Image (tube, rainbow, N blue to C red; front, side):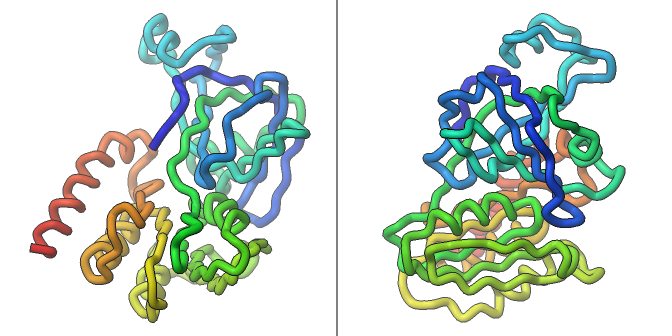
Length: 277
């Protein structure tokens, strides 16, 4: 996954929207967004900086300089969010943030933002875009993957077949999604079930079309792990045809998950190798 050097970009909140009860849409602008290298991927992401209370950083600055020059207790916390859209002509960057009331760090922060507020971020990074040579596409995710899947659907070649499974809390969290592809979209409502349980069941039961698939599977790490094994071992999807990662982990904050993620990936790969052998 590629990412720009850790330069900190400052942007201004132009407006905020609430497309669903659990989603806050931030539209950002400002001179520093000019020439932002967004477009190669549909899962472009940025990392917002959250300074400790009362800490104001000089600008411009690089993240490495902050960590070099400031004590650890003044370092920012970071949260990664997918770029939903980038309008280079208008200079507007759109980012969707999942919001569950007062829970977490980024949700309450996004809910409190107002036009004119300044935000800081690093990036963008990114790694995935739908392969136009694939025979069909599989896109699977929870709310955290919805912006990337929505962007990917807009990038599908005309008429490209795609099976899409999106799990959200309930009907009010569904969004209209546009695509030039031949998309079969299934919304799954959690309705009290564990996160990802409906997605695992749906993909397990899916009758795979013939031909080469290009798959994108992202969201809570528990269900991602199950689907990773299903796709790699049982369905034989080549690693290079699969973009799959846990965006978050139930029961862990973001810092805990990022510190554990490398080991988690290594264990998953070792388990796949053992089963394949």
